[in-house]
Image 1: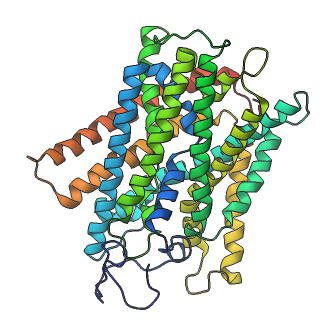
Image 2: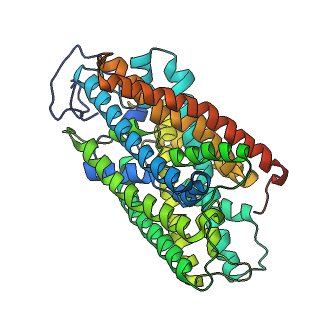
Image 3: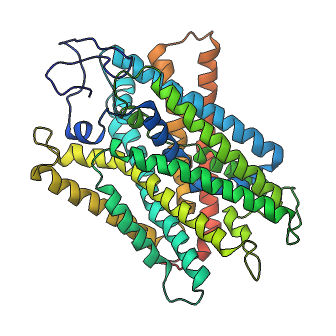
Amino acid sequence: MGTNSGEVYTSDSEKGFAINHSHSTLPEEDAGLKFVLKSQGSWFHCGYHLTTSIVGPVLLTLPFSFTLLGWSGGLIWLTLAGLVTFYSYNLLSMVLEHHAQLGRRQLRFRDMARDILGHGWDKYYVGPLQFLICFGTVIGGPLVGGKSLKFIYTLYNPDGPMKLYQFIIICGVITLLLAQLPSFHSLRHINLLSLVLSVTYSALVMIGSIYIGHSKDAPPRHYSLQGSHVDKLFGVFNGISIIATAYASGIIPEIQATLAPPVKGKMFKGLCLCYCVIATTFYCVAISGYWAFGNQASGTILANFIGKTETLLPKWFFLMTNIFILLQMMAMTAVYLQPTNELFETTFGDPKKGQFSMRNVVPRVLSRSLSVAAATTFAAMLPFFADILSLFGAFAFIPLDFILPMVFYNITFKPSKHSIMFWVNTLIAVISSVLVVIGGIASIRQIILDAKTYHLFADV
């Protein structure tokens, strides 16, 4: 990707040096690779992309996950999931570098699946799972943004006539405009802003929780797990799924593809930047929120900031926090649009024509606009989509982020069966596979329990 000449470089952006091989088996450059996954970014840009793909409004559910796991269980799993995903994402990066050095550069998750696991795995397993994650997030973007807009609206106009679906449509229009940005690299400044916004609203939530926890309106705090033995058991797996989904990305290869040569060490630096932000935001929100509200922490901690008769914090606090969440969610949605944009570009674009030629602009605008319109329609119809997204997390995020990196590494590098790394990777893959099944069952159970409150275009 680092050159448009007829020569092929096996390691142009993976190992930090270039070697010319005319017999290389690099994939032909299609329109998706050429136009969307341009290799022009620095490790800072990579860190911005990684942070935006992981750190989002889902972190506001972390105090609720602690109500299902308790103090010790919540802190242990929050830490363990962070260590496992950091390790997992580094394994993916190492596999990408290794195959590039061999002359087969992989720029997409489905490229890795095809080259490592064989034909069919890209089209019938990894590709659909990644599409499910990306399109699901694009549905969630206008939904979360719409709820933030509606909250701001009702804060200042409690009896106003506007419904949730109207705010979702407004956010859908913003998403449609962001969808027209030509490449992943073109999001770098937006994703820097996203990083700042995520740190800012996490700090606001932490300050709000501590303030309420010390105020005269502080609720009574209890930290015991609630419900029957069955409810507690399913709650533990729900809590595990929530935290696993909070750390999930599902688009690591596509993010690494945006790095410009030389790339050696850049992905690791980007991950370090990303996980510094993760550690700061995740722990601050989870600990302060659970400390302030105990087992009464709501599905999103902001709901606890509203008392029975009035808000527990000034209106400006809610205005700022919801605006920051809205803007950051739009940036996250733009990131998860990129793999689907790349797929549309590969299918409908012509790499032999210019990126901004009419031949490529017309199908690009049409395909991206129709995709966002469909996602916005789903979001307006299914405002309970969060329950469905937890199901996606169990069946899609965990395989892509916890299982496949271990499998890819063991197949590629073939570590000795007597080595610690082989058994660590195998253990993580096996335990994660069990979590897929149990987490999926727990998510389906929650959907069934909540089904009585579901109806299309609900104003919730």
